[in-house]
Length: 389
Image (tube, rainbow, N blue to C red):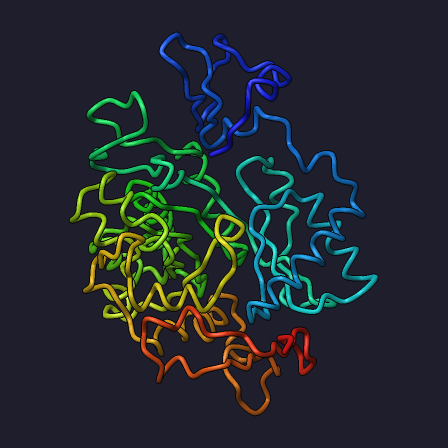
Protein backbone atom coordinates (compact mmCIF):
# COMPACT_ATOMS: atom_id res chain seq x y z
CA UNK A 1 0.00 0.00 0.00
CA UNK A 2 0.97 3.65 -0.48
CA UNK A 3 -0.74 6.75 0.86
CA UNK A 4 -0.87 10.22 -0.67
CA UNK A 5 -2.43 13.37 0.76
CA UNK A 6 -4.68 15.69 -1.25
CA UNK A 7 -1.71 17.65 -2.62
CA UNK A 8 0.01 14.45 -3.77
CA UNK A 9 -3.19 13.22 -5.43
CA UNK A 10 -3.74 16.54 -7.19
CA UNK A 11 -0.13 16.68 -8.34
CA UNK A 12 -0.41 13.19 -9.80
CA UNK A 13 -3.74 13.95 -11.45
CA UNK A 14 -5.54 11.25 -9.45
CA UNK A 15 -9.26 11.98 -9.14
CA UNK A 16 -12.69 10.38 -9.34
CA UNK A 17 -12.18 9.67 -13.04
CA UNK A 18 -8.90 7.79 -12.51
CA UNK A 19 -9.25 4.16 -13.55
CA UNK A 20 -7.83 1.30 -11.50
CA UNK A 21 -4.71 -0.10 -13.17
CA UNK A 22 -4.37 -3.83 -13.77
CA UNK A 23 -3.33 -5.47 -10.51
CA UNK A 24 -4.18 -2.51 -8.29
CA UNK A 25 -6.99 -0.44 -6.79
CA UNK A 26 -7.43 3.24 -5.96
CA UNK A 27 -9.43 3.19 -2.75
CA UNK A 28 -12.32 5.64 -2.84
CA UNK A 29 -14.78 7.57 -0.71
CA UNK A 30 -18.53 7.12 -1.06
CA UNK A 31 -18.68 9.75 -3.83
CA UNK A 32 -16.03 7.96 -5.89
CA UNK A 33 -13.20 10.36 -5.16
CA UNK A 34 -9.88 8.80 -4.08
CA UNK A 35 -9.30 8.51 -0.33
CA UNK A 36 -5.51 8.55 -0.72
CA UNK A 37 -4.78 4.82 -0.33
CA UNK A 38 -3.25 3.13 -3.36
CA UNK A 39 -3.22 -0.67 -3.46
CA UNK A 40 -0.47 -2.65 -5.20
CA UNK A 41 0.16 -1.46 -8.79
CA UNK A 42 -1.92 1.68 -8.14
CA UNK A 43 1.06 2.87 -6.11
CA UNK A 44 2.80 3.64 -9.40
CA UNK A 45 0.26 6.42 -10.01
CA UNK A 46 1.87 8.46 -7.24
CA UNK A 47 5.16 10.28 -7.89
CA UNK A 48 8.17 8.10 -7.14
CA UNK A 49 10.23 9.65 -4.36
CA UNK A 50 13.27 7.73 -5.59
CA UNK A 51 13.05 9.50 -8.94
CA UNK A 52 14.42 12.66 -7.32
CA UNK A 53 17.51 10.87 -6.00
CA UNK A 54 20.74 11.23 -7.90
CA UNK A 55 22.68 7.99 -8.42
CA UNK A 56 25.31 9.30 -6.02
CA UNK A 57 22.78 10.01 -3.29
CA UNK A 58 21.13 6.62 -3.81
CA UNK A 59 24.48 4.86 -3.41
CA UNK A 60 25.28 6.93 -0.32
CA UNK A 61 21.97 6.01 1.33
CA UNK A 62 22.55 2.36 0.49
CA UNK A 63 25.91 2.37 2.27
CA UNK A 64 24.23 3.92 5.31
CA UNK A 65 21.66 1.12 5.20
CA UNK A 66 24.38 -1.52 5.09
CA UNK A 67 25.79 -0.14 8.34
CA UNK A 68 22.36 -0.46 9.94
CA UNK A 69 22.07 -4.07 8.81
CA UNK A 70 25.55 -4.85 10.13
CA UNK A 71 24.42 -3.45 13.48
CA UNK A 72 21.71 -6.09 13.57
CA UNK A 73 24.25 -8.86 12.91
CA UNK A 74 23.47 -9.32 9.23
CA UNK A 75 26.33 -10.18 6.86
CA UNK A 76 24.34 -10.88 3.67
CA UNK A 77 21.38 -8.70 2.70
CA UNK A 78 18.85 -8.96 -0.11
CA UNK A 79 17.15 -6.29 -2.19
CA UNK A 80 14.55 -7.82 -4.44
CA UNK A 81 12.58 -4.76 -5.47
CA UNK A 82 14.95 -2.70 -7.59
CA UNK A 83 14.64 -1.48 -11.17
CA UNK A 84 17.53 -2.53 -13.38
CA UNK A 85 18.94 0.99 -13.55
CA UNK A 86 19.38 1.07 -9.76
CA UNK A 87 20.96 -2.38 -9.79
CA UNK A 88 23.53 -1.03 -12.22
CA UNK A 89 24.21 1.96 -9.93
CA UNK A 90 24.92 -0.43 -7.06
CA UNK A 91 27.18 -2.59 -9.23
CA UNK A 92 29.20 0.45 -10.31
CA UNK A 93 29.45 1.72 -6.74
CA UNK A 94 30.75 -1.66 -5.56
CA UNK A 95 33.42 -1.51 -8.26
CA UNK A 96 34.66 1.76 -6.75
CA UNK A 97 34.60 0.59 -3.13
CA UNK A 98 33.71 -2.88 -1.86
CA UNK A 99 30.58 -3.19 0.27
CA UNK A 100 31.27 -4.15 3.90
CA UNK A 101 28.62 -6.91 3.81
CA UNK A 102 27.32 -8.90 0.85
CA UNK A 103 24.32 -7.67 -1.13
CA UNK A 104 22.23 -9.91 -3.40
CA UNK A 105 19.79 -8.15 -5.71
CA UNK A 106 16.91 -9.53 -7.76
CA UNK A 107 15.48 -7.86 -10.85
CA UNK A 108 11.74 -7.18 -10.78
CA UNK A 109 10.19 -9.18 -13.62
CA UNK A 110 6.68 -7.68 -13.50
CA UNK A 111 7.33 -4.39 -15.33
CA UNK A 112 10.06 -5.38 -17.80
CA UNK A 113 9.77 -6.67 -21.35
CA UNK A 114 10.66 -10.15 -22.53
CA UNK A 115 13.70 -8.73 -24.33
CA UNK A 116 15.07 -7.12 -21.16
CA UNK A 117 14.25 -10.20 -19.10
CA UNK A 118 16.11 -12.39 -21.59
CA UNK A 119 19.19 -10.20 -21.25
CA UNK A 120 19.51 -10.67 -17.47
CA UNK A 121 22.32 -12.99 -16.46
CA UNK A 122 22.81 -14.67 -13.09
CA UNK A 123 25.97 -13.63 -11.25
CA UNK A 124 27.10 -16.60 -9.18
CA UNK A 125 30.13 -14.86 -7.71
CA UNK A 126 30.26 -11.64 -5.72
CA UNK A 127 32.17 -8.68 -7.08
CA UNK A 128 33.27 -6.49 -4.17
CA UNK A 129 30.27 -7.69 -2.15
CA UNK A 130 27.64 -7.39 -4.90
CA UNK A 131 25.87 -9.79 -7.23
CA UNK A 132 22.59 -10.18 -9.10
CA UNK A 133 20.96 -13.31 -7.75
CA UNK A 134 17.95 -13.82 -10.01
CA UNK A 135 14.42 -12.66 -10.84
CA UNK A 136 11.51 -11.53 -8.65
CA UNK A 137 7.79 -11.82 -9.45
CA UNK A 138 5.03 -10.26 -7.34
CA UNK A 139 1.73 -12.13 -7.66
CA UNK A 140 -0.41 -10.52 -4.96
CA UNK A 141 -0.52 -8.06 -2.07
CA UNK A 142 -0.32 -8.39 1.70
CA UNK A 143 -2.52 -9.86 4.44
CA UNK A 144 -2.05 -6.81 6.65
CA UNK A 145 -3.25 -4.62 3.76
CA UNK A 146 -6.04 -7.11 3.08
CA UNK A 147 -4.83 -7.47 -0.49
CA UNK A 148 -3.41 -11.02 -0.23
CA UNK A 149 -5.17 -13.06 -2.94
CA UNK A 150 -7.22 -15.85 -1.36
CA UNK A 151 -9.33 -18.82 -2.43
CA UNK A 152 -11.83 -18.25 0.41
CA UNK A 153 -13.29 -14.84 1.33
CA UNK A 154 -11.86 -12.59 3.99
CA UNK A 155 -13.76 -12.62 7.24
CA UNK A 156 -13.32 -8.84 7.25
CA UNK A 157 -12.06 -7.10 4.12
CA UNK A 158 -11.02 -3.52 3.40
CA UNK A 159 -13.59 -0.69 3.56
CA UNK A 160 -16.47 -1.28 1.15
CA UNK A 161 -15.45 -4.84 0.28
CA UNK A 162 -18.17 -7.33 -0.64
CA UNK A 163 -18.85 -10.39 1.50
CA UNK A 164 -17.18 -12.60 -1.11
CA UNK A 165 -14.03 -10.44 -1.34
CA UNK A 166 -10.89 -12.51 -1.92
CA UNK A 167 -8.60 -9.70 -3.26
CA UNK A 168 -6.93 -10.15 -6.64
CA UNK A 169 -3.67 -10.96 -8.43
CA UNK A 170 -1.26 -8.05 -8.79
CA UNK A 171 0.22 -9.60 -11.95
CA UNK A 172 -1.60 -11.19 -14.86
CA UNK A 173 -1.62 -14.96 -14.07
CA UNK A 174 -1.24 -15.97 -17.71
CA UNK A 175 1.90 -13.81 -18.01
CA UNK A 176 3.51 -15.50 -15.01
CA UNK A 177 2.63 -18.95 -16.37
CA UNK A 178 4.08 -17.99 -19.75
CA UNK A 179 7.33 -16.53 -18.41
CA UNK A 180 8.35 -18.83 -15.56
CA UNK A 181 9.36 -21.86 -17.72
CA UNK A 182 12.10 -19.93 -19.55
CA UNK A 183 13.45 -18.55 -16.27
CA UNK A 184 13.73 -22.02 -14.73
CA UNK A 185 15.22 -23.42 -17.94
CA UNK A 186 17.90 -20.69 -17.94
CA UNK A 187 18.85 -21.48 -14.35
CA UNK A 188 17.79 -18.09 -13.01
CA UNK A 189 16.69 -18.37 -9.37
CA UNK A 190 13.13 -17.07 -9.01
CA UNK A 191 11.70 -15.32 -5.99
CA UNK A 192 7.91 -15.18 -6.12
CA UNK A 193 6.01 -12.87 -3.77
CA UNK A 194 2.96 -14.87 -2.68
CA UNK A 195 0.99 -14.16 0.49
CA UNK A 196 -2.48 -15.54 -0.15
CA UNK A 197 -3.21 -19.17 -0.94
CA UNK A 198 -4.60 -18.31 -4.39
CA UNK A 199 -1.29 -16.64 -5.27
CA UNK A 200 0.61 -19.65 -3.93
CA UNK A 201 -1.56 -21.92 -6.09
CA UNK A 202 -0.57 -19.86 -9.13
CA UNK A 203 3.14 -20.03 -8.31
CA UNK A 204 3.00 -23.80 -7.83
CA UNK A 205 0.86 -24.31 -10.94
CA UNK A 206 3.62 -22.75 -13.03
CA UNK A 207 6.26 -25.07 -11.61
CA UNK A 208 4.03 -28.14 -11.80
CA UNK A 209 3.49 -27.49 -15.50
CA UNK A 210 7.27 -27.52 -16.00
CA UNK A 211 7.66 -30.68 -13.90
CA UNK A 212 5.14 -32.51 -16.07
CA UNK A 213 7.59 -32.21 -18.98
CA UNK A 214 10.54 -33.65 -17.07
CA UNK A 215 12.43 -33.48 -13.78
CA UNK A 216 12.99 -30.00 -12.41
CA UNK A 217 16.60 -28.85 -11.99
CA UNK A 218 17.92 -27.74 -8.61
CA UNK A 219 16.03 -24.47 -8.99
CA UNK A 220 15.35 -23.55 -5.33
CA UNK A 221 12.54 -21.17 -6.29
CA UNK A 222 11.45 -19.20 -3.25
CA UNK A 223 7.87 -18.55 -2.14
CA UNK A 224 8.38 -15.14 -0.55
CA UNK A 225 6.21 -14.56 2.55
CA UNK A 226 3.88 -17.58 1.99
CA UNK A 227 1.76 -16.32 4.86
CA UNK A 228 -1.47 -18.15 4.14
CA UNK A 229 -0.05 -21.39 2.76
CA UNK A 230 -2.38 -24.35 3.22
CA UNK A 231 -1.13 -27.77 4.38
CA UNK A 232 -1.65 -29.26 0.92
CA UNK A 233 0.43 -26.44 -0.57
CA UNK A 234 3.30 -27.25 1.78
CA UNK A 235 3.18 -30.81 0.43
CA UNK A 236 3.38 -29.45 -3.12
CA UNK A 237 6.29 -27.16 -2.18
CA UNK A 238 8.18 -30.14 -0.79
CA UNK A 239 7.55 -32.21 -3.90
CA UNK A 240 8.56 -29.37 -6.25
CA UNK A 241 11.65 -28.25 -4.34
CA UNK A 242 10.17 -24.83 -3.52
CA UNK A 243 11.66 -23.05 -0.51
CA UNK A 244 9.25 -20.96 1.56
CA UNK A 245 10.70 -17.80 3.09
CA UNK A 246 8.19 -16.98 5.79
CA UNK A 247 7.50 -13.43 6.91
CA UNK A 248 7.74 -14.71 10.45
CA UNK A 249 7.30 -11.43 12.34
CA UNK A 250 3.61 -11.35 11.38
CA UNK A 251 2.27 -13.03 14.55
CA UNK A 252 3.58 -10.16 16.67
CA UNK A 253 3.05 -7.15 14.42
CA UNK A 254 -0.27 -8.09 12.81
CA UNK A 255 -1.45 -11.26 14.53
CA UNK A 256 -4.41 -9.60 16.24
CA UNK A 257 -5.36 -7.90 12.97
CA UNK A 258 -5.20 -11.23 11.14
CA UNK A 259 -7.68 -12.76 13.57
CA UNK A 260 -10.15 -10.09 12.43
CA UNK A 261 -9.28 -10.48 8.75
CA UNK A 262 -9.25 -14.28 8.52
CA UNK A 263 -10.75 -15.71 11.70
CA UNK A 264 -8.83 -17.69 14.30
CA UNK A 265 -8.33 -20.88 12.28
CA UNK A 266 -6.62 -19.31 9.27
CA UNK A 267 -4.81 -16.69 11.36
CA UNK A 268 -3.31 -19.40 13.58
CA UNK A 269 -1.70 -21.00 10.52
CA UNK A 270 0.01 -17.75 9.43
CA UNK A 271 3.70 -18.49 8.79
CA UNK A 272 3.36 -22.27 9.36
CA UNK A 273 7.01 -22.92 10.23
CA UNK A 274 6.39 -26.06 12.28
CA UNK A 275 4.25 -27.66 9.57
CA UNK A 276 6.90 -26.92 6.94
CA UNK A 277 9.79 -28.24 9.02
CA UNK A 278 7.86 -31.39 9.91
CA UNK A 279 7.59 -32.04 6.17
CA UNK A 280 11.36 -31.68 5.77
CA UNK A 281 11.09 -28.44 3.78
CA UNK A 282 14.17 -26.18 3.88
CA UNK A 283 13.00 -22.69 4.83
CA UNK A 284 14.07 -19.21 5.79
CA UNK A 285 12.45 -16.41 7.78
CA UNK A 286 12.71 -12.68 7.25
CA UNK A 287 11.71 -9.19 8.41
CA UNK A 288 10.92 -7.64 5.00
CA UNK A 289 12.62 -4.39 5.94
CA UNK A 290 11.93 -1.50 5.74
CA UNK A 291 8.36 -2.58 6.58
CA UNK A 292 9.79 -3.44 10.00
CA UNK A 293 13.41 -2.94 11.14
CA UNK A 294 15.88 -5.74 10.24
CA UNK A 295 16.07 -6.93 13.84
CA UNK A 296 17.19 -10.55 13.58
CA UNK A 297 16.94 -11.39 17.28
CA UNK A 298 13.35 -10.14 17.40
CA UNK A 299 12.61 -12.20 14.28
CA UNK A 300 14.01 -15.31 15.99
CA UNK A 301 12.03 -14.50 19.13
CA UNK A 302 8.73 -14.21 17.26
CA UNK A 303 9.32 -17.50 15.44
CA UNK A 304 9.90 -19.16 18.82
CA UNK A 305 7.09 -17.47 20.77
CA UNK A 306 4.37 -16.37 18.26
CA UNK A 307 2.99 -13.87 20.76
CA UNK A 308 0.82 -11.05 19.41
CA UNK A 309 0.85 -7.46 20.65
CA UNK A 310 -2.13 -8.26 22.88
CA UNK A 311 -0.34 -11.25 24.43
CA UNK A 312 -2.30 -13.91 22.54
CA UNK A 313 -0.28 -16.94 21.37
CA UNK A 314 -1.17 -17.23 17.68
CA UNK A 315 -0.96 -20.84 16.58
CA UNK A 316 1.15 -22.33 19.38
CA UNK A 317 1.52 -25.53 17.35
CA UNK A 318 3.49 -23.58 14.72
CA UNK A 319 6.23 -22.43 17.11
CA UNK A 320 9.77 -23.66 16.50
CA UNK A 321 12.83 -24.16 18.67
CA UNK A 322 15.57 -21.56 19.05
CA UNK A 323 17.99 -23.73 17.07
CA UNK A 324 15.47 -24.14 14.25
CA UNK A 325 14.87 -20.39 14.10
CA UNK A 326 18.61 -19.67 14.10
CA UNK A 327 19.14 -22.24 11.35
CA UNK A 328 16.53 -20.44 9.23
CA UNK A 329 18.55 -17.20 9.28
CA UNK A 330 21.98 -18.83 8.85
CA UNK A 331 22.40 -22.17 7.06
CA UNK A 332 18.85 -22.00 5.72
CA UNK A 333 19.50 -18.61 4.19
CA UNK A 334 22.83 -19.74 2.73
CA UNK A 335 21.11 -22.74 1.12
CA UNK A 336 18.45 -20.49 -0.40
CA UNK A 337 21.23 -18.51 -2.11
CA UNK A 338 23.14 -21.65 -3.24
CA UNK A 339 25.88 -20.54 -0.82
CA UNK A 340 25.74 -23.32 1.78
CA UNK A 341 29.30 -24.44 0.96
CA UNK A 342 30.65 -20.98 1.75
CA UNK A 343 28.36 -19.42 4.35
CA UNK A 344 25.84 -20.14 7.08
CA UNK A 345 27.98 -21.88 9.69
CA UNK A 346 31.38 -21.53 11.33
CA UNK A 347 33.48 -24.27 9.72
CA UNK A 348 37.00 -24.66 8.37
CA UNK A 349 37.08 -23.48 4.78
CA UNK A 350 33.99 -21.29 5.00
CA UNK A 351 33.75 -17.52 5.03
CA UNK A 352 34.39 -15.84 8.38
CA UNK A 353 30.89 -14.31 8.63
CA UNK A 354 29.51 -14.44 12.16
CA UNK A 355 28.22 -12.41 15.09
CA UNK A 356 29.05 -12.18 18.77
CA UNK A 357 25.93 -12.08 20.97
CA UNK A 358 25.68 -10.68 24.48
CA UNK A 359 23.81 -13.82 25.64
CA UNK A 360 23.24 -17.35 24.41
CA UNK A 361 19.71 -17.50 22.92
CA UNK A 362 19.65 -21.26 23.58
CA UNK A 363 19.86 -20.81 27.34
CA UNK A 364 18.01 -17.59 28.17
CA UNK A 365 14.29 -17.50 28.80
CA UNK A 366 12.42 -17.37 25.49
CA UNK A 367 10.73 -14.13 26.53
CA UNK A 368 14.02 -12.18 26.41
CA UNK A 369 15.52 -13.48 23.15
CA UNK A 370 14.45 -10.30 21.36
CA UNK A 371 16.47 -8.21 23.83
CA UNK A 372 19.81 -9.93 23.19
CA UNK A 373 22.34 -7.37 21.95
CA UNK A 374 24.65 -7.76 18.98
CA UNK A 375 28.14 -7.21 20.43
CA UNK A 376 30.08 -7.48 17.18
CA UNK A 377 29.51 -8.39 13.53
CA UNK A 378 32.29 -9.99 11.48
CA UNK A 379 32.07 -10.01 7.67
CA UNK A 380 34.77 -11.74 5.60
CA UNK A 381 36.93 -11.87 8.70
CA UNK A 382 36.69 -8.11 9.30
CA UNK A 383 34.78 -6.39 12.10
CA UNK A 384 32.07 -4.24 10.50
CA UNK A 385 30.15 -3.40 13.68
CA UNK A 386 31.07 -3.22 17.34
CA UNK A 387 28.65 -2.23 20.08
CA UNK A 388 29.69 0.86 22.00
CA UNK A 389 30.30 0.35 25.70
